[in-house]
Image (cartoon, rainbow, N blue to C red; front, side, top):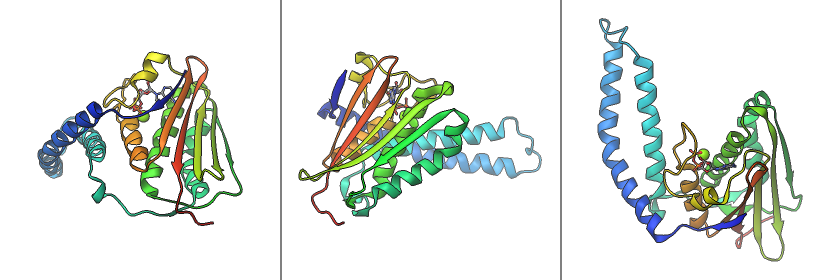
Length: 233
Ligand code: ADP
Ligand code: MG
């Protein structure tokens, strides 16, 4: 099953409403965290039950809220484009996840075209997308391990940069693929269902596309295609 992923107008509105709500929740949450922290510093309540858990959960909610805020952030607020070396970016991400992959018996393969130009884009945004996709692949592989493949290529003369992330994990049925990118859609116990919503939004803002092809029980490939009109070698 292969599908090109585009966000509908309806989903954009859901994203905007969620982000509005998130904004309203963020301030009281910051206050709560501050006071809980104060409580923790107080000698008498030093042994306050589940203190660490409370802080951890507040931080988790805060993380979700930040994701939501990112979804509807106006473009003007976002970072400037710079010339990004995709090979370095991918290597950075793999370095971050190296130990985890080893522990989970995941074998990682990368192939990056030699003749890869620098891409004029927002580095931290692209990094965020790649981290989300790699993390999903890792989760789809589970504890039994398997293969994760990252391939980056440049297609002359279309001036498109293509990055594919393939895993041999659990895969998805067509109904699941259909729902990818809907805010809060998750099949995981601890999932937020915001990773792909954010990722699709970012790639769309960059003028690119994401395509997914997945087979239940076989694995999944996400393909990012980015235009690279203003390039430098
Ligand atoms: P989360 O990871 O928090 O669940 P995402 O937006 O990142 O949220 O992903 C949404 C859902 O898409 C996941 O819960 C999972 O069902 C499905 N999914 C995403 N990537 C993969 C993958 N590589 N293999 C299998 N399923 C995936
Ligand atoms: Mg995810």
